Image (tube, one colour):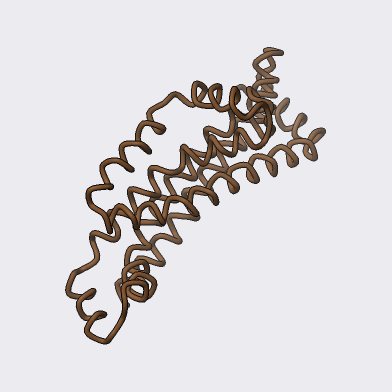
Length: 217
């Protein structure tokens, strides 16, 4: 971006900051809804994989199939079933976020030292208490790593939302592409990239913090 282009971007942001803020907030809401649903489904599925080894390949393969589908193709299929709008992109983000969370929950639980589990049984804990008080807390750094990856993926996929009637920063990007307006493209792409970077850094710090806590525990 040249100096004149940068000046034009600053002027555009100054004149349209409320609109851009609204798009950014819409983008964040979509991502948070998709990630929230993925956590609600992914952690129990990861626990199921760890408890039922025969089911693990089936569940992980199903989640992996969704992950390898092109984003636009998956969203188009969902649009046929669910129609246009917010719920379709949220379901898409949910599906794309599942694999990292399921896989990391599964791996984290399998990494828990069997001696620690036996010690928990020795003090009278049942399976639910062991899971809630011992195994999941020790597996949380892995879960956090999965959430971190899922968040970055979801922020990127959410830029496709306008193609299926959604909102978010992708609306500014595609508007710029249609109008061949570089300033509008940058005004959508730069905040989207910044969101991904901020999410990665923030979740990375959280992951390190709970990792240290798990080591002390």
